Length: 404
Ligand code: SF4
Image 1 (cartoon, protein in one colour):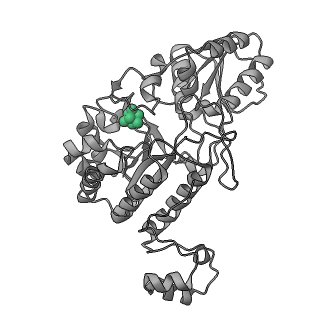
Image 2 (cartoon, rainbow, N blue to C red):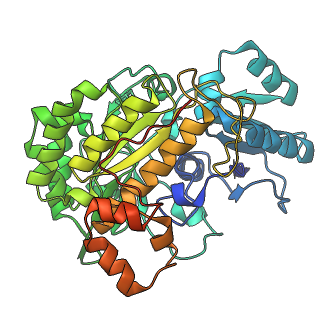
Image 3 (cartoon, rainbow, N blue to C red):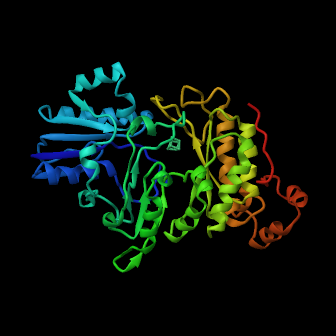
């Protein structure tokens, strides 16, 4: 049998990719499963809507966020039109979240596609087949691994526990390693009961004679870190880089977040490499988010801002360069478009200051509109003198008001 695997052409911003290659990990595992268990003669993976030179018997189309459903349905329509006889199976985040929605079911029936909720269990145990990727700009720069699926927590804004309701953990990942850089796609890596063993084996394992570098796409669960501070040192020994923790709770929880940051610093991570995930455009209003950001500045850590979108949001035409309304993208009732954009700008300037050790940010200096000597002089001046000399100077240690 011949199989076609499709990742629709989602508008993933370049800066959101932590690797330069196209890596639809779920489809790569399905590809491995089809080759081993379904005796596939041909398995081809494509990105977007392309004319392929064979007639597939089965087509697997993946989905991502609900607000990228348009790209998903465009692919469904395209391949159904090209291959009226093929069996089309669809899965992924959007499909899992909308699985029980009557209108979604109706559309699936109209296109004669079979939806699947949650992960494809038969494929999950297979090592992703990276040989299916033919179109990347360079050699594979990392490997994606899951040491677990699902998450034992139930945060109201998160779809993980709906998409992956069954939790499963691997005891070891050693045999799965095939690259010197590993990016873990686990939602809650530290919740794995075997995490100590996994981190110890990562510290010892070598690939092609070289040790590895690891990164976690999601933040580490700070509450687990607080209860098990030794995990900080094990993460460091396993050569994790850019550790992140989440702070989605109220401002008053800052003593706990500070403790979690301290555990990472005590383990040897530089404060400027630590990131705090903070959701904005959500229940916590702009003024409180600014207070949280200033706390992060006091700890000299970066902020990873996540703009909230409801799990059933079907569009997102956010554009940071122009003024917009609720017709364009989701704006929480406690926020305005102006505040959403101002907070993003504040976070960007904050992170530049943390990374470079600057006490202020200025667009004039960033765009090199003053000489290097003058710029050095300004960096050594007192705050009041800088404010007089540079009208656009922005100080990360201040809360910046933004009217609604
Ligand atoms: S801890 Fe993270 S992954 Fe788990 S439910 Fe909360 S937000 Fe989702």
